[in-house]
Structure formats: structure tokens, C-alpha cells
Length: 319
Image (tube, rainbow, N blue to C red):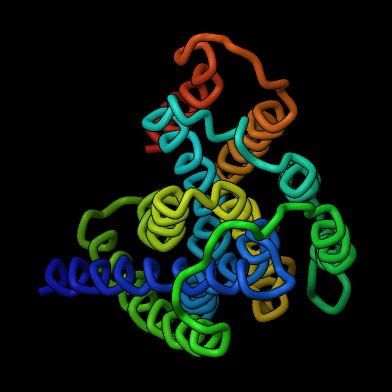
């Protein structure tokens, strides 16, 4: 029965995420917001709702490994989505067809967040303020400041024809799709957790890879739909923005986890997941900074291939 629930919830999430992306594309074309901003904040927040539900549930049942692993694992899986899509559609040269100034700030901020988390996980004895790790407060302040930076750095034009939906219809449709993603994504996460329990795998691996992959399904659909719409800025912006948003959800889980700083309560395997996220983010920044040239398809795709191999190697080692 749990298998049926899992796949049905996945189908609903896929369908809702497709509409989420379509309405987001209309909003980016018919409002002052561009694709990168819509992807980085609006769609990223909506597609991160399943991660929120999963981590809050993990805190409630006193399983910090799943709460933290879900967020860190979702971030590396999101970057894997970009890498795999870039490999499959290497002829389109995704990273050479976007507004770099609109997406580099999000990637750099994500790199900074990963560095802070790794430092906290490596150095024992996290500083706390009212039971919340001081690193979480720093990350929250940096995120608030970064919102203006990402928005002001976006210069993408809105010259492509938009869908026939009106702006009002798109906003209403986006809101409904987001609610559906939240509900179905929550069921997907719970079903994934039940499947994990039946398999007997450890909590760190389950949170970092199995549940993280299932809750990242909306991001996958969003990127694929963005490709279909040729809105490449929104494809990358939704992933980078989702990663930033996930870290803020980690801040929330630390606030709600009342047994001390949540990073101090997780297993050492989370360090490797965080480092993997750091390395993959560095590769993405390199791809965004790399100048456009006429190199061969596979030479262009080599960094994305590296990210894909690293992900599966770390998954195998932790398993």
C-alpha cells in the first residue's frame, strides 16, 4: 500500500509542479519580475515546501539526522539535477545561455552558506543563543541581505511572448499549485520515510539521499519545464534559489529543535554531504563564470559529468 501511495503522490507532485512552473513563467513575463528572480524566490519557495514538512516532522519525532540530512541532501540532489540536465542537453549549452550576473550571486551566497555549515559541523561545541546555533542566525541575516542583491543583479529581458493566462489568473493558479505541491509533497515524504524504515537503512543516509531525492522531485520537474519554455534563467534560478531557501528552512528546524543546536546533534556523515554540496557549488560557479567558446560538447559537459560522478561516489560510500 505504501508503494502505491508513494507513486500516486509523486504523480500529483509532478503534475502540480508543471503548472507551478507554467504560471511562474507567466508571472515573470507579465510583471516586473524576471525569470531568475521568479525562479530564485517564488518558485524556489514553493518547491521547497515538501522539504519543510519532512524536516519539521523529523524534529517532532526527535530525529535531527533526517531533519538536517533532508535539507543538505536536497541541495546536492538539486545540483545533480542541473548537472544531469546539462549533460543530456549538452548541445544547448545551458550555462552559456543564461544571464550570469543574475545567477552568480545566488551561487556565491550558497557557497558561503555551505562553508559556514561545514565549519560548524567540523568544529565541536557550536555557540548557541537561546538554544539556536549562532551560525544559523548569521545565515539568516546573510539571506535577508542577499535578497536585494539577487534582485538588483537580474537584468534579464522579458521580451518573449507569455502564455495566454492573465497575470491575475497566473498568480491564483500559482498559489493553488503551490498548495497542491505542499500537500502531495508531504504525503510523498511520509511515504518515503515509511519505505526507508522498511529497508533498515540508517537515518543519515535516508535523510540525505532517499527522502531528499523524493522531496526534490518538484525541482526536477521545474527545470525540465523551464527547458521546454526556453526560460534557462528560471531553470538555474529555481535550483540555486531552492538551495538558499532550504538552508533557511534548516534555520527554522534549529529554532524548533529545543534540545540545543541541531547541527551538534547529527552524525558525522552529514559533514561529507555538506562538503559534497560545497564542491558541486564551486563547479556550478565555474560553469557560470567560464567564457563562451566553441569547445566540443563533451569538453563543455566535463564539469557536469564530474558533479554527477561525485554524487554517486559519495552516495555509495555513505551507503
